[in-house]
Image (tube, rainbow, N blue to C red; front, side, top):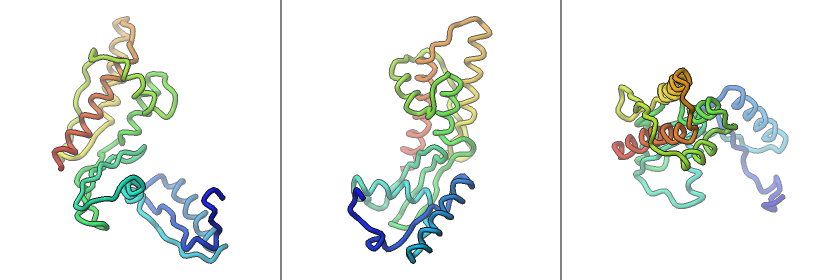
Length: 191
């Protein structure tokens, strides 16, 4: 209604075929199939990560070749694109995606979901007090955030065991510094 478009103006129904959570993908494909059948429209399966990358065209034109850093709730990848439809995954998460790590660290700190905006806001109030390890992976462009999440949990447990008060802002700062440094250093190296 807002776009002033009717189903007669729509040529096809697109849906995410993957990757993603099986339940969400199943609901999406069933809804898309139903709408396509009901209105006699072409059904177009799309790759989830491709959608993240091409969403940037709403802001600016993509210039190839390019290196894309995909950072979403469940995905963390560096993708090299020689041209419009060539995708080469240079690096990807080996365990938790960065968004999952943000959510888990937020939960440990007693912050609301989703964790990313809350940790980012809190980290701006923090300072470099706590030290967390930089995640390591076999492939220099891959990511690993489960160890970082565990390091935050161990830090909090260690501090509580010693009856030290936890400064949530400083924990958020330490976590975000390591997480973002991991992303950016690997992206710069890949470029």
